[in-house]
Image (cartoon, rainbow, N blue to C red; front, side):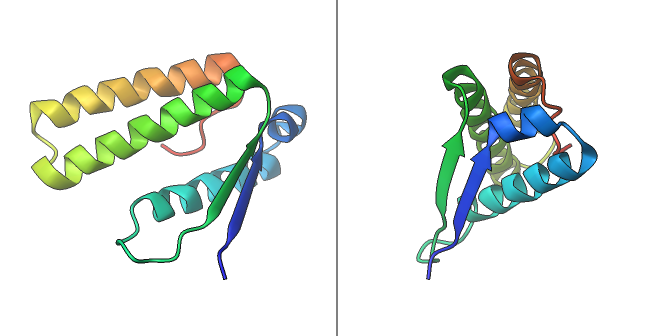
Amino acid sequence: MKETIIIDLTEVKKLNESAALIKFGAKLKRMLYYMFAPSGMSFAKFYLKGGRSDIKALVGVLASEKQYMDAFLKNGLNDPMVLNNRYRLERSIKHFESETGIKWPLK
């Protein structure tokens, strides 16, 4: 049976407490786990709730996280491409935080 992960950004913005941020971080960590899972593994269903710009910012950070980790796993930490992806990820995180008002829980 597939796992269902629901992230409600409006709820996280409303609460903005440590417990809500920990729960948000755990769900993001789980999503990233499935993004890097070996092929053939049963994937979870992801649902995002919130404003259009908030969701767009979250998807941008997740895409940047994936690109950074793919480059890191392929080329190692000292490769210029990995460093470029790291800077892109940091810009995506800043955009997410300014757009949503939610602190990015994965550092």
